[in-house]
Amino acid sequence: MTQLLGPKALRALLFVETLNAQGTHPTKSDVNAFIEARTNLFDFDPYTDGLYPRTVDYLIDARLLTYSGRRLTLTSAGTAILRAAMADSSSTGRTQPIEVVGRMTDPFVYAELLARIDDVADALVIDPYLHPSDLAALLRLSNVRRILTRDTRINGMTKSDRAQKLKIALGAHPETQLRFASAGSRELHDRLILPARGGEALILGTSLGGTQLTVVTRIGEDPTSALRTHYNSVWDGGAPVEPITREPED
View (spheres, rainbow, N blue to C red):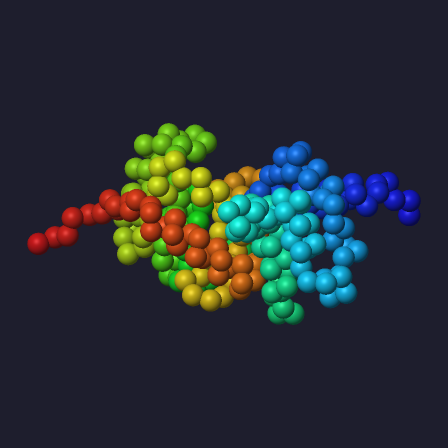
């Protein structure tokens, strides 16, 4: 088969694809820096070429690391590539990476998704644009302990109307905690189902109420741990949503 693109162009495409899959979107300058970095990582062997200076120089030139004040720091691109590599390396024979493919409007696909969520122990559900009807479905799952979303409008529903209906739905199961991420937070963009301890998370390509064709993917324990640490801090800074419930009778 004739190859239409050279190795540099293919590396650029793979770089963008990897970062996009991790929720990061590089600029043209970032991509050019990565493919033009002066050390060729694929020809470089740190065991035969000496200890790591050339590797570190490459990572800095490729904008995967920054160096300031004699300290190295991962960039967002470096973090995305590391997470992708960790997800690949932590896969095991028993893991089924792709769990569900389809549209959430298909009742069978939606039921399959709920079944997968039900398998995640003491789950934290993260969906920035969660619809109140989907919250009502989640509240029927005994393993869902916490739900994190944004206080925002969604299609066909104003911000205040959505908040009110979320409170009403939450009243059916007030033991489940619901929080809005702090106002102006940019840390809530993925759709995730995270176990409280150990285990593997699910990542959703769209909100539970989405209509697009989507994939639900299981990710390994190491990236799950990193995501749990991050989103627990977002949870801690969030605003609790109080359910609307019937007043207890005397």
